[in-house]
Length: 417
Image 1 (tube, rainbow, N blue to C red):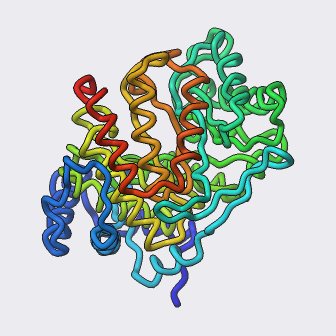
Image 2: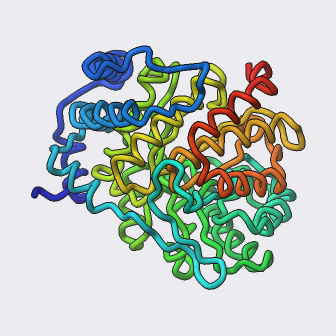
């Protein structure tokens, strides 16, 4: 069998692949191929808003086949060179088969084992908190320590810092590199202070470009404990910051946590289109970006959320497709819009996180309180609640989660807009 391409081969293909302009990719290539695959596999108009959680596993398997075919046809676009990086079917199969199905993170009493899961799997979906909500310098230490002290939280991500000793950080330069170093140092210190020195982490959430990542891992064996966060542009694109982070992580012998959501209302269009686009991108992450963990994220740009009916359905079918047909360590996010300390946020967390866990994801992070738009709009309490839900919902039957969604959606869905 032809092995998956290594990073050197990927960099070569990013210079020599088929030419496609960014505009053509966005307005023609993605929409046309997605529509073709939906029609080919009979998946048009299969979303069921009355049942926000898919319970038809044969439908989930068909979505996987469509996403798999799309991955081979589509590839990923390098934004700078405007070249398409494609992989062969043998390379894709190799990447999927040889991706890890289990990963140990952290050490001592705080060690966690992330495992491949299937729908309604009783093994807990691990939870990392929080997402990268921006925090001011005075708030970051105490709030992050508060997250560490939520014992159900398995992995620390924490909020995103935007300044260093009063210096506003600019992307792609010296101030971001400095922030990376300080964030990494403080990330480790706050875990010690919170009594969880061996707690795994995700880094560097404050890094907009590769500059922030370079300095995050300079002290100690950082990547033996933490996942390197490598986000790529939607839909199905890569760029120099992304590829540089990959090279750096591989050089550090680290674990790559890659991701980017399929966008309902974006280039793939419908919830069904976003699902097969995300399945395709999830598979390509493992062959193109050398991912260890990642894939399964959905976002509805019409509502800046995914805990609405279309978003939940798309989340469920995407994770079911991946978890039933691969052993990949997939990741999902529930994107809430309500603010911290509100009843509505707890409802949104309850439904969104339960759907992800019950649908077979290995890992989830959150919350994204207030849609992630407002500085300091985060508390440790909702972080702990997210983790409790993730663990408790992991063994639930999908039909019961569907009933739960139908019960609680009316309590908050009118506010999402």
